[in-house]
Length: 422
Ligand code: GDP
Ligand code: IMO
Ligand code: MG
Image 1 (cartoon, rainbow, N blue to C red):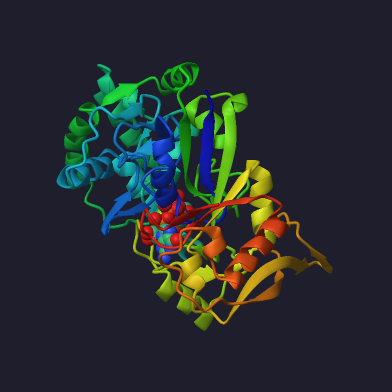
Image 2 (image 1 turned 60 degrees about the vertical axis):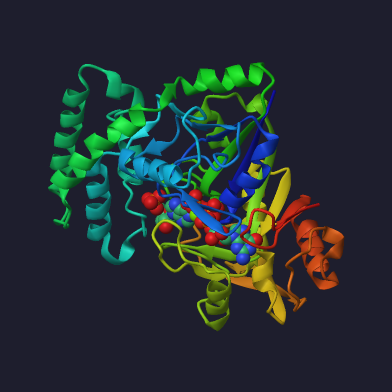
């Protein structure tokens, strides 16, 4: 049949996990196509909170298959912890969780390299989650990486040691950082058993067979489009293609198989880590958003930087992804704001435009804002678009007009049930 995509339009943490969990029951397979344990996808079902890093967010829906695709990088240690958490909650996943053999492995020395490289950058650091993402993708593109399928090969230890030795060589150029390599290696090797206890498959055949057999597939993005390696705020990005193009390479499907592209954005905007953020409110307003929206990283616990929703930024990522519907989350966080701002245009280099410059990092941008009256009303219990306060409706309608894409869902709280389907 076809594959629908749900991905982040901002700098991550848009609420992908919540919405994927909500819509997963309309699909047969949910597949992650890129990223790794840098992701933290939160799902709340009846007050129980779950945070997933590598496992697709369809896992809480019975009968739905979940595939960790070839474009993902897996740390067996984090992965084992995720499985243990699911076991602890009594969630059965064994027959429904599959791993692509082509997914690359994050070694302990990848995490060590990540930490050493960030330490060496000092003030210029990316603000990486230190999960070893950059070094693992570097080994993938440098054609040195280890993949899940390699675990079963006779020469696996040889390959592992060769890669570790290469990492030792690289580490010499960085200052030393504290890291219990022996301890982490021990955990790593023991956690391989958990990985091996699940079914690994040729992900590209698995997905294409599913499509041929008229199954519906949902591809779940990680990070956000502004963190894309090619089109994000380079070098303050992650190391994978987070945009819809990454679905094809990460799962091994043709572009013609992609149907709907659901782009998700907060009713405001956040970013965690370093790098440009034109509509950032590094002030009391941002502080209020952080407190009300509980804007602290699901993976690292770091406070997230907060600011207003940014139309030029969203038009850019809608264009990159071919977004066919927009989902707005965390509308409730703005309930108590008298006025709400929307970044409508950028002024830089003597012009006013909605086009992003070559380099957001080095361009001095002044964001022009339009002001909206707040609705000053609790949204809990509202289940239809029509029942929203008129001022909330006109805020959303105005966003829709400016983005030129329909808003199909609105999230008004962290619970699975707090979602309005328009
Ligand atoms: P993801 O990485 O895109 O899956 O998003 P995260 O899980 O990192 O961050 C989103 C946070 O907002 C989580 O704590 C969610 O529980 C929470 N959340 C999601 N949707 C809503 C919403 O509509 N309102 C509120 N208040 N919280 C939400
Ligand atoms: P989810 O899927 C928000 C950010 C990091 C850092 C940069 C590079 O939960 O939306 P990396 O560890 O990839 O080398 O970090 O990217 N980052 C995220 N920010 N949400 C995420 O994932 C992120 N994954 C990475 O903070 O700035
Ligand atoms: Mg997150």
